[in-house]
Image 1 (cartoon, one colour):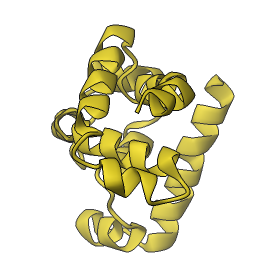
Image 2 (cartoon, helix red, strand yellow):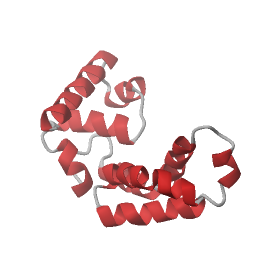
Image 3 (cartoon, rainbow, N blue to C red):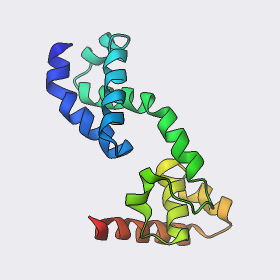
Image 4 (cartoon, rainbow, N blue to C red):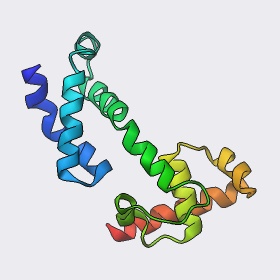
Length: 138
């Protein structure tokens, strides 16, 4: 397990930080992930890709964080949480709604098209525009 920590801790911290955008919070989640490694020890070492398993454990630990984002960014909702502000501040309300629903909620373009009563082509174009805004900010 020490080898696992030495090899992946920095990458995992960076991965979590990119999600939560708070270094202290990212460290807390990383600790939770490595505590849960003991339960998944055999699963992690039986596979060639321990990094993927650690990412899955991190996503599991981040469920509460994602639920908060989902509550803050429901389809049709235009308010921004502090976490999302960096990504979505320059987006239009439509771009933000589509981006959040697909990226944070895991909706498909067809599901979202049905929810918003828009054609799928419109949803895809709006998502593409949202990613263009993100690329410009980088």
